Length: 262
Image (cartoon, rainbow, N blue to C red):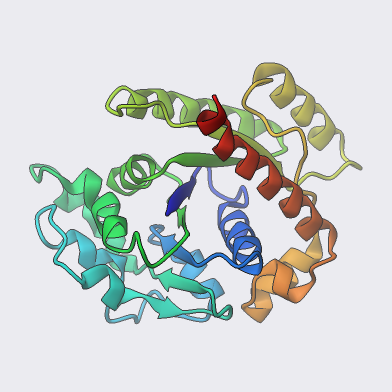
């Protein structure tokens, strides 16, 4: 199983849409995918028609065992989605309480890595949607993943958020055996606005090696897919947004192969 995390310390940049769009395209290609919602807001969980405020069991259950994960628990928490090849490990609002509980508890940063290890033979890919703040949940997402996707809205304030995220990643990498490779993905791009055009230039100038050279455009079909509760490629496989995510997936798969080739 390959594990990808989608993260940024700024909200509203397209993390959930990117996670689900990539998962949908992987499933379309015949891959078995588990999507993991670690955001207490539960946007991914809500996307697939579940209420994070009323779920009896969720990814929160994984953190209740002092850093260990009971055998079989991750599989018991999985829920079906609109795509038969995608399973959901849902969020709940209780995740928001973890930051208060985590001081003094060792091992909480590896709970998701241990959980996915139990699902290793059942799925080809895991895609983790992480919360927009540095804490035990984001640490879990980064510790478990082999590749990081950082969506960045093409507007000026988002560049500062990206700087924070890159600094966080540098801190995390000091405790990893290998540095976590990452791709910066410009999102919500509108070529009609000067803000989008200038921000894209800044991103490409500042992060020439890490940035994906494409961008995800503003596309109302992505929002329509969310409203319908299906992946963007299920809703409209030829929309501008889906075509862009297809190109992004091709880039990520090539980046995934690069270390092996080297």
